[in-house]
Image 1: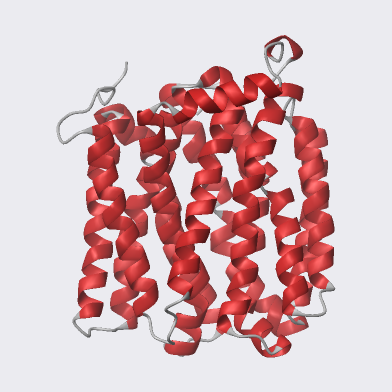
Image 2: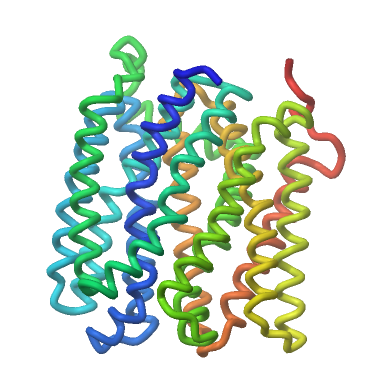
Length: 401
């Protein structure tokens, strides 16, 4: 493996993990926050939804701006805003303030989501981009694997507010990483045609590209199923099934490891099958696992071990889908990679927030609302994948080189 691949993946993976770390480390604290602030499940989940909405909407600004002025300055700004929002969350007096401050925190965090994807496209295309994206996700996996476990330990030892002080410190560390290890990949000569008018024109081009929108929709539905799990699993696994916060962190880490582990096979399978065919096959496995979970739940089978096994399988297949659809979508629009990455991220996070909001209206203390939400997203992703890529071998699915 080329050392430059590893270095790029390490730096961008660590940056990309900052925002999700503020989600994953926070999950075991959700029941505690509700009890401490006397807030309902819906009110506590609103703080998570506000974060997702901000991360989605903010990307529409960071992406074009990073095309106009380069990648590093927007990263510094976003990380600073993220750190300030984290401190505010640690000091929040009530759940309403927490929701507002989580929105501010999310506006900063989205820079670490959209810009690393654009940097990958600045440097690589095709299967090289898929390899780097998969390696990035391997480094990124430190968040969903370690964050819930560490969050549970922090909550037990020092309370939920300590989680946000740690997250603020991570933001400062990320700024040091940008300063010392990340060169500018959008030089001035590539910014000459970038401006507000060109940004609006670029969004118009993207919104007229049906295949780009289809690939983005597949990713958005996959992300939405995972976000539904994020928002509801603490209450389902801890309150409904009776797990401790540490056991919950372990269960969450296992499912995250499945997603991340399978994502590392993207480059190998993509080279053999072509990315389009890989996506279609992986979507079938993902939908089969999640709809099986849904059907069993509707039939009254509500077993913790069965749920964890099927989620493990389903999220494993999803790990093949997410980097592949991102690479295919960005490959089509290299000169406006920042804007394309922004639109992709906006759709993913806003769709995820909307699905979370709908599922949240039906929360009843059981696992069914979560399972229905996950299953519905998987089925919709299956339909969109065949609409976008076709039922037979899709154009662009043949292996390259």
